[in-house]
Amino acid sequence: MAIRNIVYEGDPVLAKKCRPVTDFNPRLHQLLDDMKETLAKADGAGLAAPQVGVLRACAVVMLEDGSYMEIVNPTIEAASGTQEGPEGCLSVPGRFGIVMRPNKVKVRAQDRNGEFFEYEAEGFTARAFCHEIDHLGGHLFTELVTEYIDPDEYYAETEEQ
Ligand code: CO
Image (cartoon, rainbow, N blue to C red; front, side, top):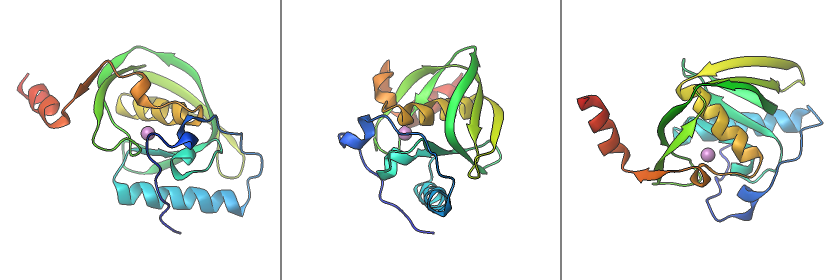
């Protein structure tokens, strides 16, 4: 495994649509292993392949128990409810903004061996799936921000309520 370099906002790779993964081979497994290691080191909630400069439709998302789920060729099959909350991105360091997302999503994806599965997520995890799947379409959360915030102030105010 190896740490990969994360690319930042302004890099054209982040604005391109990923190609589907068609070969579930050791190269894909290496990429996913490296992405998990890179995500763990960066202490993030999710990482998409374009963020390490690879235009293939796969991502890693942290689940509520702290484990990582690999999603290959993911799609959102169903979404319900809404949530408004702070969001950030390892490719947009230091900037956090309020983004509206569905509260629940059903994701359909393949695993690293090409097996299809479905997963239902809600709350912060649903937000993370939406954010990472947006990356695969060449979209950043900054396109959806209604207001930029200081996360320390935001969470301090939330705790006071
Ligand atoms: Co991101």
